[in-house]
Amino acid sequence: MSHYRAKNNVSYRSGADPAIVNFKGRYYMFVTRSHGYWASDDMSNWTFIKPQSWYFNGSNAPAAAVRDGKIIVSGDPSGRGAVIETENPELGDWKTNYAVINMPGGTQDPNLFVDDDGKVYLYEESSNKWPIRGIELDPENYYIPLGEQVDLFNLKPEQHGWERFGQDHNSDLKPFIEGPWMVKHNDTYYLEYGAPGTQWNVYADGVYTSKHPLGPFEYAPYNPISYKPGGFLKGSGHGSTVQDNNGNYWHYSTMAISVNFKFERRLGMYPAGFEDNGQMYVNTAYGDYPHYLPDTKVDQHKERFTGWMLLSYNKPVKTNSPLVEKEINVVEEVEEGYMQEQIKDFNINKINDEEIRSYWVSESNNDSIYIEMDLLKPMQVNALQINFQDFNSEIFGRPEDIKQQFVIESSLDGKTWDVVVDYSKNETDRPHAYMQLEKAVEARYIRYNHVFCTNKYLAISELRIFGKGKGSLPQTPSNFKVVRQKDKRNANLTWDAVKDATGYVIYWGIEKDKLNLNAMMYDHPNYEVRALNVDQSYYLQVETFNENGISERSEIIFID
Image 1 (cartoon, helix red, strand yellow):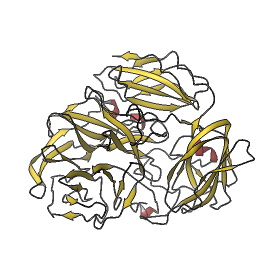
Image 2: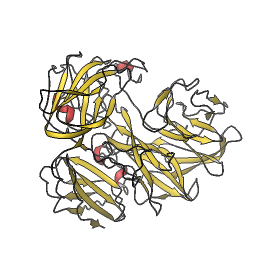
Image 3: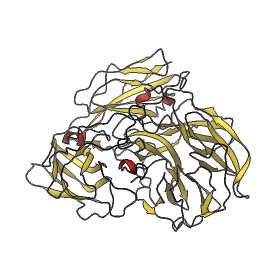
Image 4: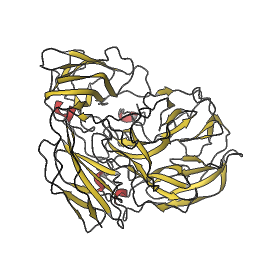
């Protein structure tokens, strides 16, 4: 819970800029300003480690890599600190050699890369002016720089539509390039970078490739690689790509809430990898729906979606709690063009509108509060997720006593109820509590019974129910058309609305069998893609989804 805005009495959670390494078969995740880091054996259950020694002010967009049986890290908030290292990250006895890596403009959003030959490279920058830069470091001499920094590449929003700033790329403000991360696959170096701004739904990662760690680098024509402009939680930029213990790649990224402050963010995790021709991909399709984790075997790593559909969208919901009458206390930068406008309707129908920036706020906070949702017909329920929000929370730092306690019940008739989740004695902080049922249940009604939360106000951005309806799959969208605009960074996609559709997903890519980019939209058909590269042709396709599953995709359309 951030202290950055304590002078405004604004508190907000944030997790951003993840750097993940696989160290001796265990995963370690370093995140901006966390005063420690996380460890996991399965990429699902993460344990926070409060290290024996660490940065006093927390790390800022930290870099992490593995070399010679140690984890090495660069993340001093000053931008001018030494590389620190440890052989024992569980204890966290981090040691410094006191050497200051003093780049001319400081080190912003660093990335450390250890090549196959043991050479070490530093990449860095976070700016709407300066390019991504790289330099070799001397691991035998305190990681001091060897030679001079090399300018590698910068944004070209006039050519790359996805690099434009603002919500849906609709701002004329200069975009930001940041968060480099290097991956080597076969004999090619893939240097990822984030753009155009962390607070927008279109925050994404792109990639340049080279045959040498310091270039020259070539822009990948299939950019961006990690892009999620629609759905419940949006954005997928400033990330890291890591191999699991089964040899598969995963991409971790930064996603935006940006309500209490523009830097209110969360982390996303998606299957990633490389096509046979070397094209890099990150599959964000249905990315905020349940997916199979690394240790679950699937036919194709790229396709890990469970097929459990969203059952809760815009369903009738009621509560016995009065609505809050307080004004939200946030740090606003709307007029400067750096934030979206606030959603100030805190009514109960915001609890299942699939928008993380909107939320319901209860005036009271006691164990008599309930929320009841009617799915309208019996359905198979496999999992639930409750996303709590920090409304005027006034909690700062890292208190160990933050917790949410509740019980969830299901019913077929609204009269007889069965407990499906009992968190009444939960003692941990679960702001995005995801609960997979051991055995699926048939239910029409779902009821959340509140017990306790540490925050003064009970605020929930979303109560999400996943499973399968018992009806027919939706129809494939008909009359699909694509018209590229005079500004070739944009294209208009249209199709006929499908009855009983929850929403649609469009796919596009530069090869017919590699439509690796996607955008999700609820309710309405049609979409304006504003993420295209000027001198590139594309293939596009669309599908429908609802509670019962996903339709066949439409015919593929080619645009030049």
